[in-house]
Length: 231
Image: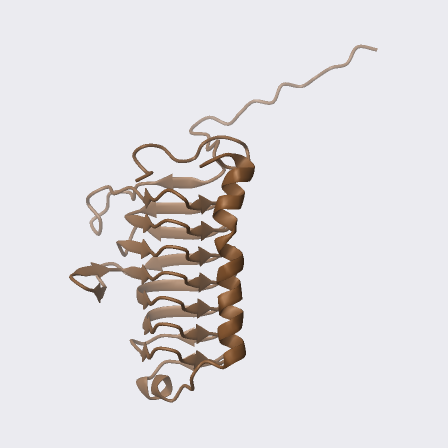
């Protein structure tokens, strides 16, 4: 019996063969100049990630599937070395609102060795310093989180608060006044150890995935970085 094969027609328009979207911000009244992401060598962007606009991703960063880093309104973003941004995390910012880091202003600034766990929302203006752990489905918006702090799962940190270094935000807590932020206890030893272990595990992923798929390639084997992105 003769077999009949149907020919599938591809949809008209652009085809994202890389199963991810990495590109410049659209020109708007908020951001009239197109700026493309800067992705340092030694990072790994998983399939189904989105990186738009003036986003700098430094070396050793792991971005897990379905993460969205969208600097099309608030801008720019900076992601420090050896940080991990896990599955389903969203980074976005309000236009013309900033945090100051040295001489520069950012919509979102995330330091080194930071873990942003599954499903968290980081919304600028926001500063997350080095060695911070942000837990599952938590929200950090219009806030500063000091070095070595732990924001537990389902917690909310907002309303312009500043969390001091090495402070523990309990699960489900709503930290929306400076009085609440100042009353937080120091991070327990077991939570520090957990945060360090998460960093250790996720630091292995960029070189391991790049070795598995080929340097700077997605799971389909197609290179995702090009000379205008890779610095």
